[in-house]
Image 1 (cartoon, rainbow, N blue to C red):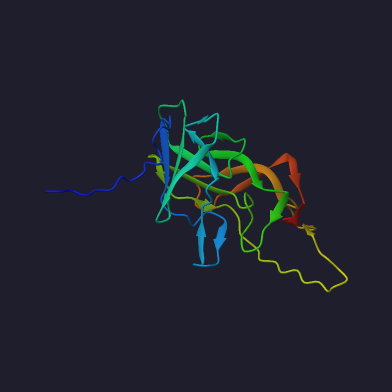
Image 2: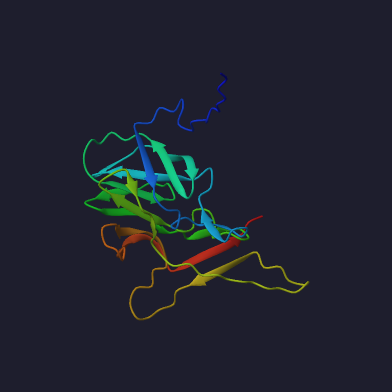
Length: 200
């Protein structure tokens, strides 16, 4: 008798992670694939992870992606508490389910057929290492047209509201436990504009 088999590569082989975060759906990510009309993760994506009120020192990297389920590997020292994830990976603070991070990036790079890498903050949480990510803000599709005499490379969106909060981007606090992801802006490090520049 002869048996034929195949070896399936294990993306986690040789990796020294103590925690794997599984993101159940890729709906929160911001890369658009025009060939299938879907939203996908990119191979170099990273997320920030916390457990309880302890933040991992280094970002968690994408180690596998199959059927829309993404697995991120990394190390965290905390041994109890709910898990929290933030995309894009960045300097975050966490306190009882409220995460402080760059809520909306002030300077964004736009790429054709994508929402822009790192432009769309998404958060998730769960008592287990499996979680759903949701976008914090909305997305706007902007088409800029020019003639042969003019080239547009960037645009500035400015909030000129006189009816209250004028903040449009910067660092703030997100209540991850609130389904609406209530945002409170910090008094410093916030701006009333977003500058979007086309990728070179």
